[in-house]
Each structure stands twice: as C-alpha cells, then as structure tokens.
Length: 162
Ligand SMILES: Nc1nc2c(c(=O)[nH]1)N[C@H]1C(S)=C(S)[C@@H](COP(=O)(O)O)O[C@H]1N2
Ligand SMILES: [Mo]
Image (cartoon, rainbow, N blue to C red; front, side, top):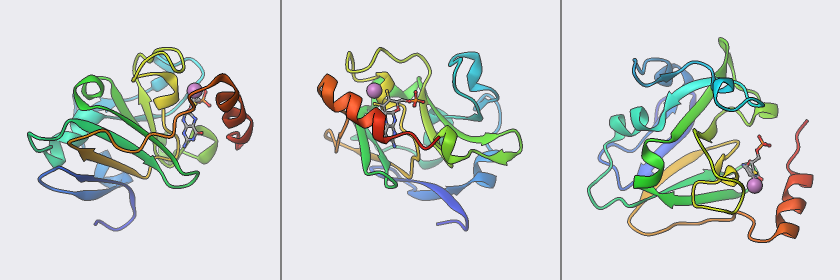
C-alpha cells in the first residue's frame, strides 16, 4: 500500500492497492470531476470517477458487486458493479485541501444521479461518507443501509458531524 493511503481498493481485482490523495491527483482526464456541486447542489468537493479508479486496479471478470466500506462509523453498502460503474464518483478534495469530515471526507462516494432513499440499489443512502475501502466481490457483500423509516431517521440523527 502506498504511503498516506486514504482509500483501499481490493477483492476481485488484478492489482489491489491503496490510493493516497496524490495518487488520485495523478488520474488524468476524462477521469476528473472538478466540482460535485454541479450535480448535487448541497454537496461540495472534487474527485475522480469510479471508472478511472477501477481502470487502475482492473476488476476480474467474475466481479459482480462493489461494496463500499466506511470503517469510521461501520456503515456499508453493496451494489451491483454494472449499475454503479458509470455513476460513481470518489470525492477527496475541496480546492487543494483534503475533504474534511463535515463533507464526508477524507473520501466520500457519490452517485451522480441517485434515486430517493430506499427506492433503489443506487439511492441517496449509497452516498457513503468516510469511505475507507472499495471491495469487489462475486456476490452481494455487507449492506447496512437503513431498511425502515425509523431506522433511517435514527441514522440521520446520529450521523451529523456538523
Ligand atoms: N459513512 C456513512 N455514510 C453515509 C451514511 C452514514 O450513516 N454513514 N448515511 C447515508 C444516508 S442514509 C444518506 S441519505 C446520505 C446522506 O448524505 P448527506 O448527509 O450528505 O445528505 O449519506 C449516506 N452515507
Ligand atoms: Mo438515506
């Protein structure tokens, strides 16, 4: 793993590895996403496409699911790889600075065009904050997204670092 790794990508990939902010900075166009507020009005930061990160680790043909792990608060989301490939963004900077916890940093996952909470695999709840690891698997992995309104509200009350 590289020094200063902020996110690990592993599982069913040819080259499991950690990425530092500087590693992610080296990803060229068309992988760059300069300003997420363009498509999520209340969120900020800059990053790279999931696809550009996957291109560096090379998922194996048998990889069917992508699981997003947030160790900080033990939150996990597992979604079909095909569905998320073209939609995922890995956000890790605010200007030149690291993305802070108040914005879900140091690494936040965002879906470009999410459905409302609990309506789909690619919903708002899958916009994982404090992302520590992206794991590729052949079957669905761990998913701790809330399944009821009450669970969902409780999670939002507790998950507010601001
Ligand atoms: N690590 C982590 N990421 C998380 C959550 C969480 O509890 N922990 N909540 C999810 C849910 S249920 C929603 S709806 C969105 C809310 O994102 P927002 O606070 O930026 O609106 O974050 C998602 N990402
Ligand atoms: Mo949610």
